[in-house]
Length: 513
Ligand code: AMP
Image (cartoon, rainbow, N blue to C red; front, top):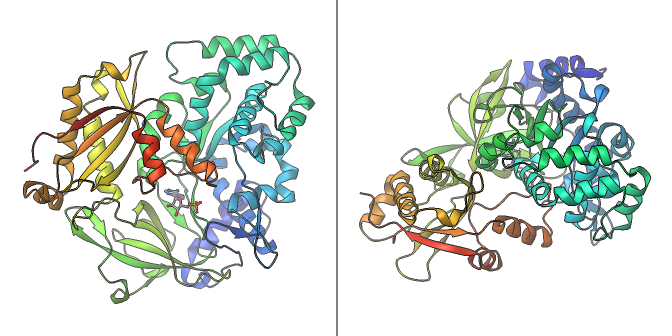
């Protein structure tokens, strides 16, 4: 089938989704091991098809940006490794970036040279990708990255480096701390002194509020492309602030294990996004997930007792854990994501992402999920918004160093318009702790009342703490492109990073029941 342009893509989506039962056996070969994927021609073929299909709906709404301009996309590869038998293995994204087809289209479609994507130091790579994005700012029609957190990381990095970046553009010389030879070579090919462009960027950036900064720096951008659902939804408010005026578009739902679904309604609000599953990408099955307490969801105690449901038999409104089988050897592999069926496109089910399956906080079998915590945080942060403060990041852990154990929330707070988070009234923070406890599920509240769980604690950390956390995980081998901040901290070292940056501790004063 001809796949040129969005028409071809849309037609194919129609065909793939018309009879899910017939096409679900047509899965293709691609390989994966843990978060590392060995590279095969079949995988590349599948990835190319998925890429075309996932772009078709955005082309319908925003035009064919491939013909009219470029994407400023933050992309980070990880080094390939060799398996004991000598095969090369790489993360999914790295294998995509390694494809000759990608390397061929890169200079035409993207602002970032390949050397900046493969730069071993992600900070040098990021600096250069922003630099190239600014140099070509008049051509940029789409700004983005795989996940919302990486886009925000880029914007914050820009906030700290815009003077240096505009100086480099003014002089046509790359800063000395960029020592990577690939980046330096790539820069030497395009950089020349451009004082007018530098002055423009300086004038735009040198303002008190960075609201809508992305729209100002890249005036032709039509949308922001990044996953904003699931754990990424916590970044929506901040992204909307920086990208005011541009739609945030989550184009696909995929994981290293399988390419799964695409968003057919790019203009819908991030909180309403559904992904239509493409039945030829893998063999999809689903484990029903039941309500355990309150509105929170959780798997039945014993997965063996639960019947797997085929893609064609899922029911609207029901939550399921995704299970995939692939030619790469994954057989009934639990991805660990919980999805809810929101409807159908032709015969293909559409899913909303609900949460990662794992219970994240548990002192005594009360089992608080990612969604439970998210809802509680949303309720509490509403107290900060009218006072001119934004909760920019949060994570949690269970502190059992004293009995009974208690929940600890790490919060990074930013003041609007030059306010410092030290100005925040401690009484409000205590109120936030109370509000979170009140918003948690029934079992939690009962356990608090019976003193099985001690008072919830919020530790406010200084600005940049979550960037330091990201740096830590990246230094341990996580790809900056695929980084997802843990909603619950398990590693001692990561905990030390946050604990060493605490500037205030607050406790809930009373039990919520
Ligand atoms: P990775 O295998 O590291 O690329 O991460 C894949 C995981 O990212 C999935 O299993 C999901 O938990 C999450 N993810 C990917 N796409 C989305 C999406 N569109 N919405 C929510 N979460 C997503």
